Image (cartoon, rainbow over all chains, first blue to last red; front, side, top):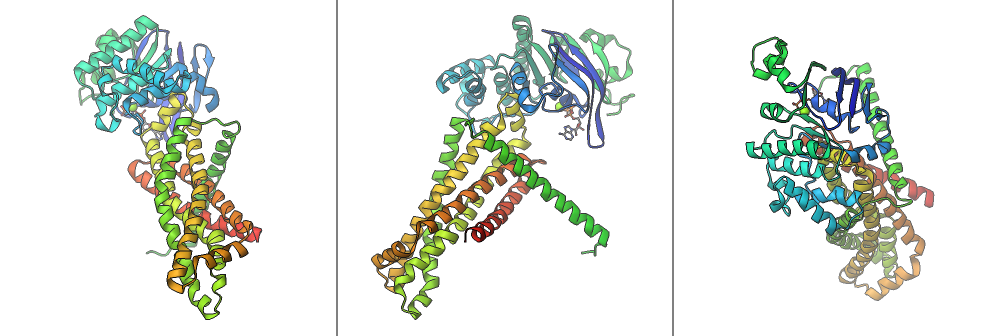
Length: 247
Length: 261
Ligand SMILES: Nc1ncnc2c1ncn2[C@@H]1O[C@H](COP(=O)(O)OP(=O)(O)OP(=O)(O)O)[C@@H](O)[C@H]1O
Ligand SMILES: [Mg+2]
């Protein structure tokens, strides 16, 4: 279970999160939505310790991780994978070696063994035929698929997907959505997905939280977002330029 | 340019001083973190080989050319004096003394900071601004042991080895120039080197090369890892890295020379 308790975070004078509390149960798929700059990426990075809160606590399966040192955080990160919003593939390596790297480092396997494991992970996102090429040869969508494969190599219990389907064609987006659903249904993986993709939200989410002005305005099942009379949520879901929301 | 009021000038001076102090402190911490991973060694083997190859093999040609010319220049400079005093037997000593103790390590150090240090900063800086460093951390891979320690070892070791290569090449270049320009036979040049040059001269220069290597590795890694602000930021970091390395090389050279003399 993932618990964010009253998280505050500012960068300089810019207050990004003003008391966000969120609980994600085991196996649940939690979507986080909100306008650009709302602080979605900042919030999820708290979980893997890439950003530390100014105030508030982060608890993972009952263990408080808020104040762990960088070294103490490494075991946590093996259980908790993150797919970044922009492609973060290592451009000095082939796609295959990108995926093989965490396998080689953490499972004490030879390079050859790690590569054959990596190939299987690439197949999950239909990228195995491009294994020997470099990230620079591809666009954002294909790189993102490889980054997803790489994040899944350590068989994590928790996965953060930061806009996994943005910039991907609808078919690939469907594959990614199904993958997220499968991880939860078959392996009990807990996922947090940052997304603007309404099709994904109403397709795979168990629960959706909307972030606005550093706080959650609504937290509940996707159906709630159709029914709610919260004007801000309505405006956001329907994409209306006019309304109470300050963008 | 507008004249600055004294208080503004003072505050600018203060800000610059703070920035420098921050960089120096950051480099000291980085050096400590890297050294801590050396005993017992915690580093990535594959990355280390890749960097040794990249730094060593690709820098060798430029080092050889620079050193060859350096040796030749030493001989040309001392040529007039040697001829005037008819001191042909001292030519080898003169050229080798200056090259081994001073000019060799400095030239190769500066070449290295421009060739290898700049490359290191640009690569790490780009990884930083494109979140690749954070991605490593998120994969539970420590950027220090995976990225920095291999680069540190490659730069320090190759700087040291290439200085030895450079010293030898410079002597060959000097001997050749001596013969062509002054008619000093290579054997007279060599015997002058062997007779007057002590091992201490050699080790003095190699010790400098070793410290220059550490300086280039730490400075270039520090500026790379603290890059922010996209492509512009990478450019700024590379710039800072090359300038700081060069300054540090001369500062270290000054202190080592004055202490070991
Ligand atoms: N490392 C940082 N330093 C300073 N400010 C930051 C940093 N990271 C994020 N911010 C600021 O925090 C705010 C929220 O950023 P964040 O990336 O979380 O937005 P987001 O909700 O993910 O938006 P998007 O949909 O565009 O990805 C932005 O205004 C951003 O400028
Ligand atoms: Mg974001």
